[in-house]
Image 1: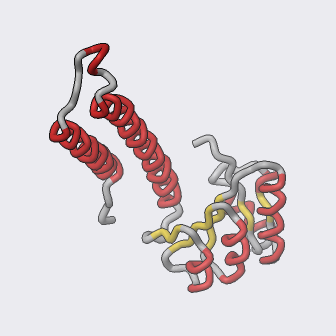
Image 2 (image 1 turned 60 degrees about the vertical axis):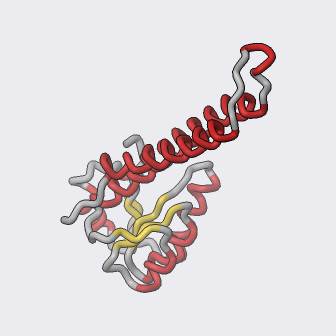
Length: 174
């Protein structure tokens, strides 16, 4: 996905490396023996260097870091403190759900951009026509009823486009 993934844990280095090895994480991206306040400091340093940070955590020790990150992600089975500090709570206790959440977030922003484009396009074309600005040059004028119908169609197209998000990123039952 083009994202830098790091392992930030309070566990010992050997345990961290055992988890990071199958993930293919670089040794520089494995930070072990980190205290809870150290986790939020690491995130703060990453942010100070211009990086946007998403933090995934599930424990009391992760809460300060979850709050510090631009996006805090907690697992459903996490502690109440971690869930409260997080921006997103994954309803499945699998880290693969993080990838799904990122994909859904990106798809949602794409839909928002598409909807804004279509709304502006309708308004850029419809408002001058409804105001009669196109009548002298092109002989085009919209009646109030036609302008209202176009506005309703604009709303319907935006809602329909939004509903297409469910088709590609629908809720799974597993």
